[in-house]
Image 1 (cartoon, rainbow, N blue to C red):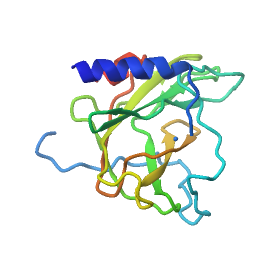
Image 2 (image 1 turned 90 degrees about the vertical axis):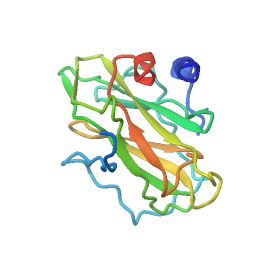
Image 3 (image 1 turned 180 degrees about the horizontal axis):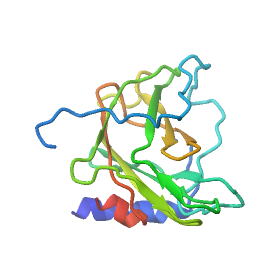
Length: 200
């Protein structure tokens, strides 16, 4: 419980900080991409850690003049071998916005090659459809265990997130992710605040 409180405090504190850089006894199931979401191109040029990138919007940044949904990210928070990342969606349109369950995730290594970690719904708080009123936000936590060789070129250095919205919204996070092919990413449910998202 102390570790959860510490992570919640750290993530809440970083809402105004720009990112520096991206049922029991059952086998995990992959979370499908939204039917109309554009598939990331595996053949695009490699994306190394030194490639210029626009940092994702920080959590709590609001619409900042946008009239489209905004997908934002916390920084990756370490906690005793665990990694936590909170995603936020703000509805900057004039109509209700439906978050149709889980986001789609794509992980690449340090040379731009695709990795194949398993994405699974958290068994206690799986992602469910969530409707956002105009100007409202919702937050979702990703959780995984740190990989054994996080600094290896074969480990994850880029995370592409496709929000389950219509139209889809994409965010790219470039950082040392501590992810590899053997990793399992737990996806939690949407919540109205960062604190509620990390307490699930």
